[in-house]
Length: 101
View 1 (cartoon, helix red, strand yellow):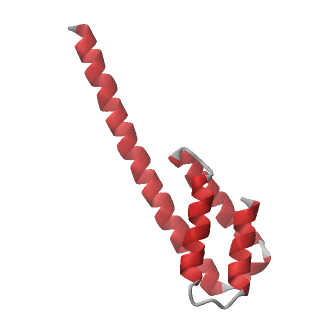
View 2: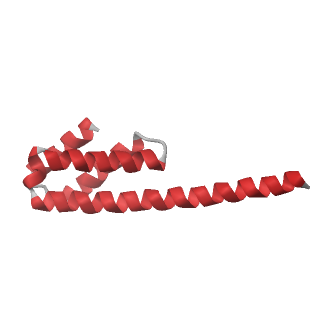
View 3: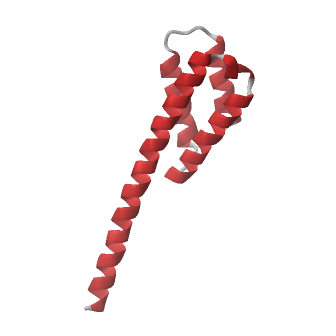
């Protein structure tokens, strides 16, 4: 996570027109370090919290860009986790019914 936060700070320091792409790449790298959606959601929130305490927090454009990107990604992971949970619950119920026969 520290490496990701450092890269966000570096991206903020350079007035790069491809800032959004760099932020997406950095967040993708952070997410890849975690296997489960719930871990990814927590890691993204922790990154955002640490960013808000860091030196680049005063950069309103970067702060908004990061907040929006994190919110979207967390929403996506949350949706995937819910869908996965429903699918697994259905499989468990189906196998229980099959075993009862």
